[in-house]
Image (cartoon, rainbow, N blue to C red):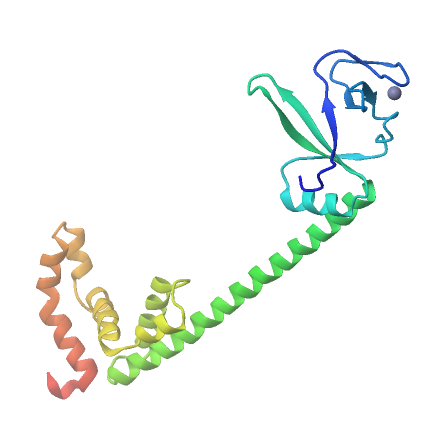
Length: 227
Ligand SMILES: [Zn+2]
């Protein structure tokens, strides 16, 4: 409400009569007041060409008001809250249409931006998987073919949407890669999952499979000769 000289239209709660055309407006008529505080129907007030935009869409309201040469704030007395409450705006039809068009364009822009962000994220994910996989291959040169991709995809899913470039880079340090490979080995190369299903505590199960995980990691890192 920054225009200061806003025309206010009241949704009346009692019977009113237009002070100018003397028409009985009945209850709930939309009226404005003249300088002497007499009720005026919208026709006499020259506001009947305006269209009503209910409150609720802030951007649409702001824009409609901006484009409308003439606009009026519509209020209604709330007996529960003992105050007038804003119901919406009366604006020129062209203004509303222009505002709607602008808001729709924004909506398109927002949709586009969302799609672009999703594509960029997917690309980042692909890049992450590739670099993670090659890091696995680099450190665990003897790991079975294709495992580096499984491990990388899993690591990526885990961090998907949360890794920025720096976080991704951090995740590529040797310890992070070792943890990811160890987790994979635990699930894929030992009976760890079976132990969990039997109800064995996670840390007990980990301890049971630790020797095998450790041997496997060494083998994947240094080759069969180390066994
Ligand atoms: Zn009138």
